[in-house]
Amino acid sequence: MEDKRPEWSSHLSFIIATVGSAVGLGNIWRFPYIMGKNGGAVFLFTYLLIIALICIIPLCCELGLGKLYKQDAVKTFCSISPKYKWVGWLCILTVTLIPCFYFVVGGWILNYIWIFLKNQLPQNFAIYFSSFSSQTFMPCFLTILFLIMTAIFPYRGVNKGIEKANNLMMPLFALILTILAIFALTLPGAKSGLLFMFKPDFSHFDKTMILTALGQALFTLSIGMGTILTYGSYMKDDTNIVKSAYTLIICDTIIAITAGIMIFPIVFSFGVEPSAGASLAFISMPQMFSQLPCSAFFGLIFFALLFFASITSGISMMETSVAAFIDNFKISRKKAAIITTAIIAVISIPASLSFGVLSDFKIFDKTIFDLLDYTTSNIFLPFNTLIICLIAGWSIPYFWKKVFGEGFLGGVFNILLKFAVPVILICVLVTGV
Ligand code: PFF
Image 1 (spheres, rainbow, N blue to C red):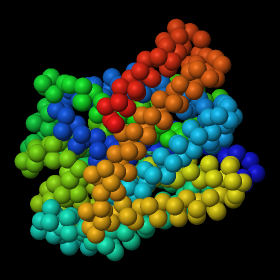
Image 2 (image 1 turned 45 degrees about the vertical axis):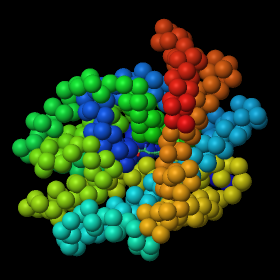
Image 3 (image 1 turned 135 degrees about the vertical axis):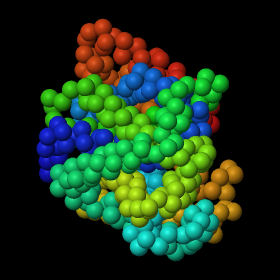
């Protein structure tokens, strides 16, 4: 139990922490390759519209629930009505399963930081990556190491741990991203890269692309698993929710676009397919860096960038479960952090092994890693977001007035919350399943 509910020490710290949660592998690794696969600019514009008009609603809902109830996700839904307690636990289940595959990637990042630090680079990164990720011991060990490095911050608390980590790492992250983007713009492929990103090719415009954009938007904004709700519960009473939500959306989008500006010029300069997919970060990018004069430097800062992005997101995932365990089981923060770490460790090991000894072990034709990624991103996230919007819209009297205000904008948001967003999410779910 914590004697008093923690509170961010300033509004800026709150914004930095929520941006730290939102900005993660979803922006630097997933966004560019999904954009590459979905035709570049058309995807980008669809994504921007979705984020500004649709995702703002569940984002404000979670922040609003956090600010109104000042509790963890489970207690919040229980306070609305005990019959909604399961929604809180479903959020906790989701946010505990995501790190089980996310931290496996964190372990790979640690390994790449190590090889660039030693400056012992393999000739062929494709062969290297598949032989490394299929090993048994090392990837598991690094996943657990990444998990422990992340867990230290929720273990230390909101102000001494989470806030300090974000205030230190996010500025470093922004600095590295800017350096790499400026460098990328000096390469010969910069023009083709930028044209690919910003000149729309409408032949890619279809239903699947729209749904992919929505799924990506929910994932990148950390919506639908109680994380934003938990961070929101530590905010000061005078914080403006709509303004904070737009600030978060703008920062997250600028960072995702800058990541594209960093990646596509490099990709076009070295003649790699922009739709290379997930392997872009672990095969194509390091292979390209290894051909540059200062290969160790560029490789190192690129993986440091991925490290900062993933650890600040990881911290927010773990904090959501830790807060729920503290509030619901009346245990200390330290105990809650240890329990969360143990649960994630047990599930992330088979997820890591699904690239090696467990690669043939499949459930619904998916390895454990893919199953965790697929079910959380395509089913749990839209489902939880749908339920959160329905509860906020229909079960809490005047919720929209408390969060959005009474004016015209409040009215529009209310209609979006009660009708438009739920209908869209149901479409996403049906397609996702
Ligand atoms: N938003 C993060 C990203 O884009 O990588 C992912 C994430 C963070 C998911 C926090 C869930 C969460 F609770």
